[in-house]
Image (cartoon, rainbow, N blue to C red; front, side, top):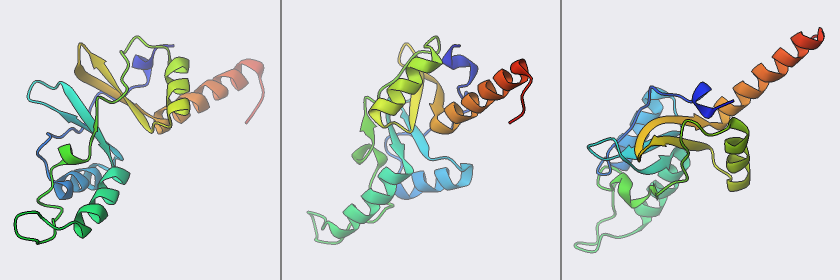
Length: 147
């Protein structure tokens, strides 16, 4: 089965200059843990997780600003400072099992799906688990057994 069967296509994205504070707000508002960072042409340039943002807020809070010594605030630091650049990506024709192995071996919580560098979808560990449960349920029905 291809990853396109389970990937999310209605995505919440952000630009590289969005502040840490605003990015975390987007994640809270949309109840998501991963936020793709795209340019004006929807080309994927990075990804940031809720964990990345929380850790960065603590790190930047303790770091003095070089100009005047004031601490950084989450509204001043752009996500480009903490995003993962050039994240591992796949195309929508990739096999689900291969993507699952990539996620497991790489410790990834999600993998962006691209078409010629343009973001077209996202698959998360939750999506993978949902697909696994559906496959197991189908197998049980085929065999005539219950969960």
